[in-house]
View 1: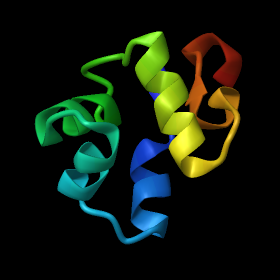
View 2: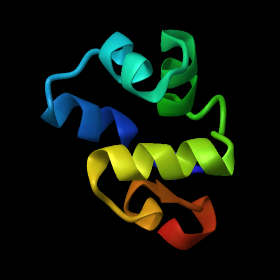
View 3: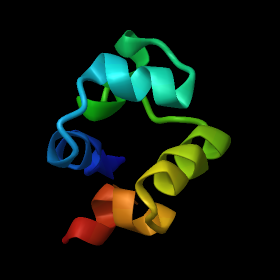
Length: 67
């Protein structure tokens, strides 16, 4: 899954730790999601989208939809 998490976080000048705290997950989890090593659960994906005030599709994209 492709995501815009790093860009969205940087636009707000949040560290990975800041975002992790807001999402109630570890900084390592945020790093793994940003680098594509881990796909978040659906509830966490919705929580991320809500935190940024976006639709889930505006944060996460399927690699097959990128082409």
